[in-house]
Figure 1 (cartoon, rainbow, N blue to C red):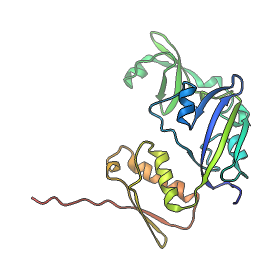
Figure 2 (figure 1 turned 90 degrees about the horizontal axis):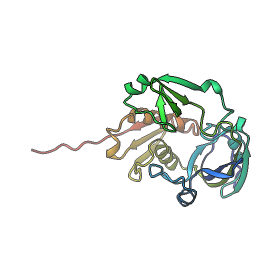
Figure 3 (figure 1 turned 30 degrees about the vertical axis):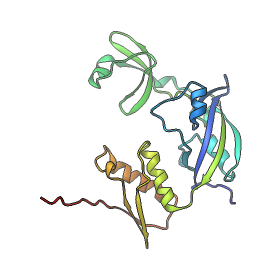
Figure 4 (figure 1 turned 180 degrees about the vertical axis):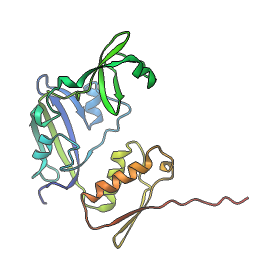
Length: 231
């Protein structure tokens, strides 16, 4: 069983705590989320798909994952500067309330919002302006991760499905049809994805991600079939 290296794809479970108060902030386990009162019905609790080196998880964590093996468990402490960064006061901004009205958002304190393509948390609301913190919620915090490498994913079809699930959580891709021939990957996605918003960008993103972990294939072709209705 080989050690993990940059560029490998893995599924892993984790639970992360802020070291200062030892409270669980995030987890891939539904039972832990419910126990710690952080359960979110919109979240699908399952192993996290990671391509090592793409910084889908904090830099300090990915550095420690390199060299681990499938099935291995480890507790890793990550300093803020190698986690979600130090808090930056310049990322706390006052925004005109009419900007929220333009996006049909009724601002409330502690509400998470997306403004100008950036995610932030509302700190204070006044009659004319809203104070928003665009720092990550974990910025400035040292973290402790309990992780387990569930599986190193090497099968190209499984890699493709995992990447789809990551970009479209909640969609059932079990009926995805994938055919490998020469240098071409032909993919037929479930019918219910055809008219999803941004599906073209998702296809492009998955193709780009796949290109970073394999050079065995040169083209990905997305196939769609439509039945002709008889009158």
